[in-house]
Image 1 (cartoon, rainbow, N blue to C red):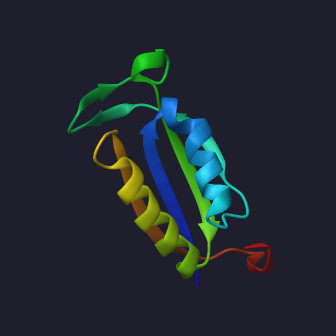
Image 2 (spheres, rainbow, N blue to C red; image 1 turned 90 degrees about the horizontal axis):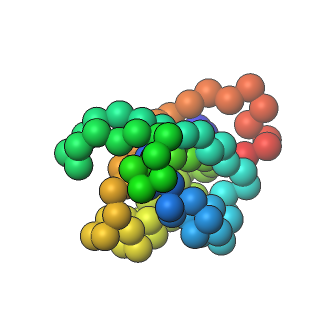
Length: 96
């Protein structure tokens, strides 16, 4: 089963986060601007200091577990970040 790992975090982390994902064997990712409200208040995707991104990675369960563990260890204590993982059906699973 392919996993969809979703990361919502501060946009300031984008460059570092994407570098980490590639080092942790993510074969690809999609980045979009995100906005909403959570435990740290309202986040607006249009203003730099308060911008958020949503990063989605389709990967194996092993890769999702490795990425999740690494990101929690590296970022959770100092940055706004949420991770979630879901089972998904992919029409071309050989790509992931």
